Length: 525
Image (cartoon, rainbow, N blue to C red; front, side, top):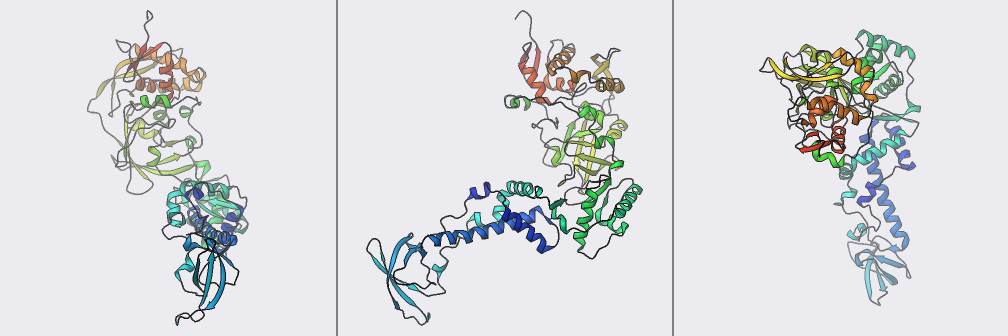
């Protein structure tokens, strides 16, 4: 028999952080005198909670009645619970001295139970297995700190992060926490020097410890605490941005970051349309591979070797970006808090290196505009990304086309800014996805459509019908594939695959033919 109110799995699933927990964490930080990560704090808190619950369980159980433990000394008339007898209650009738050379002060008690039976038990024995009868079994996973952390770390980490964030005196930088009131003051002169150093380094990035050395920041304190204090001062100064991946703190000058990193390119802006995704998931699964869109939860899947082939959409081609979809975000560097992460692209063709940026909150990767232009890529070209050997490096390449020219869907813009699609023979540099490929002879003319927000102003169903009419002219049967329509609509406005399918499946004038092919219904039907 063990403590009756022992921890069960629901205890951890429904755990909420209370004031005692925060006090424990605060005191832990004071004791260590250095910033600690959420992981370390959570592991310590789990251990603290388990110890507290063990103590509470034993106290609560023993407070109901005296529990028989051989180590205790009893008196006639005491009522006892016996864990080894399923917590039966008995009354001590008499006490006598016992004889055992191994136990000098042995006492024997006679106990009468409610059933009328009487039994004798040893007492005043300090070393006996039954003294630990209330202990939690060693194999209980809910009392194993390591197992609890591994099984529940996602929920518990979020819970702890929220509680710590709401505490005004605790600050977090790069995943580490410390009381604000105990931090070391950093003079504005050191921050001005840091700005000059970063400007000299083309904006950065530079790690904290290197900046500290160059600005000659010193104090009679622990080096980790001094570094944390400097990080906080930089973080709260709008001139600086922390751009390092998880586990690394790197600083960059905000003023020298690319505009398309600080501000979402017009081609990637999307006005949310609420639709029911559940009925269209089966249709999304029919899309060809290599379709990645940050606006949809649905996603293509990369291969097991961290090598992903992406069909470029027009908005990302024109912006010089890649979508940070659910699959692709596992490929690129991430961070604990930094909204933007700087990394390095490596062109596999010649090992050239150039900067890239992960814009986490807006879910895109920037830095490829010149590379797209230099290699004559177009919307629909297949771009290959792969993790480099060194963290923070991404390999990028494309496969050259074996044909010099191909018949490609080409977008033409009239003087009235109306668009027309035509099949024309175009020079091709890279392999492409046939349904996604669109040649754009005059991107500047298309820019005027985006700048004036012509298509974004109209309802999406009108855009779908308008573009579908244009595409249906290219097919003798008047059929249009949903993926082809998705690529074409994105030439004039940002739109995810799910929204295109939703409109096609609900439009009264459009008929579904199967295999993602659609056409306008015949009028005589």
